[in-house]
Image: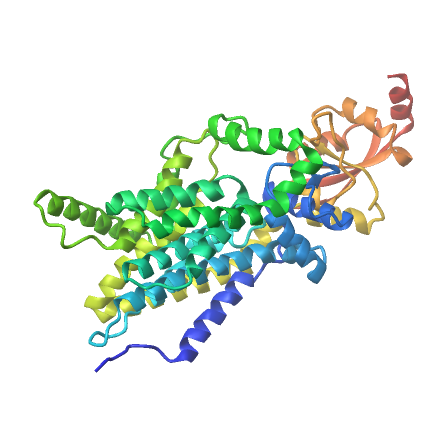
Length: 516
């Protein structure tokens, strides 16, 4: 008689509700870093124009990334208004979607292992626990950036393919819904971050079949004939109108510069050593790092055992397909980005889901031996979720206050200076793109100029209404602005990192500026 260790539905529902709460909690803090405010502002400009095609920043073309993140932000700007929550809400949903995709992968594995004489497998439970509480996923799902936006559709595509592979190995036939889903999500991944959205899935599937020493089936090979058009139809929703509207400018900036030159050079100034992602990826699995390395060791042993068995003529015990698939899925982005001339931590996020699968498989195997491991996994997951919630509530707001210029611009607006030009002294604030739109100066490269001499600022002030402006400066350089005799200056507010200073030309400054 079949037995089961299924938990009451209310326990699963309570955990799921808590995860949703944590992933949506605190999305209203100021936008952080250089990327969040820029991407949120690009979406705002598209939203205000009613334009779903051309990304712009400060009114200038911004062709660095595809449109999927912007489309999500525009959608939620319509629902919630233009604010931080709306800018991040799509990312949080895609983080939750990544967890849900991995849970579905676990369910497919559970069903494939279940029989009338064995108890129900609960691998999907561990996969959901570990995915929801892995630091990398929790962090990037809170950011208005493209890394989580490409990770979800790529995860969904790879999960869809493995479900198809399970069905094929079990001899199940029927309408190929998983394969259709595979091609659809490939198209969505290309909309999310460009060519890696199609290169990675096909490279992973190819590598998986090489590791498995299996020739792809005729059904899979023939699916390319109808599957690629599905992907192309999804991709064409943005790429086609962009090309028709902007032609070579789009091809040059988006494809050549932000794909090939970003990979082959350090043009965008993010150099790191070759091994950078080999230690970043394990850190993203925190607090499961020891279990991740245990899973990697288990995978290596599995491969070595398979090679030894085949060398002895024993091919009856093939290695676990999930382990092989996860290794292929993990290694393709990891090796690819290790050769990139430009490296940022978020690039390797698409390798985190297979790392989570490998980790969960190791924890699940431990739990089959001792109930202590089962309880420990639940405790670690809940503790991590609670710890992150407390960090968001108690620590993140203070950090965001120092990192963002939101409160500085607000202080100026409350003093009736909401239309004043905003200048940068000794540092450039990309954060101001979102919080002071339309008020930033641009140079010939379409970037915010940074001033290091008060003489250069003097030349700008003479052409401003009321000969006045606002200046954002590191706190340690604010004294230079305050001591300048050719204008009157007042520090309106500082956030311990930066200060916002209101300056107005005095008589001597006006006379000097006019003579230049």
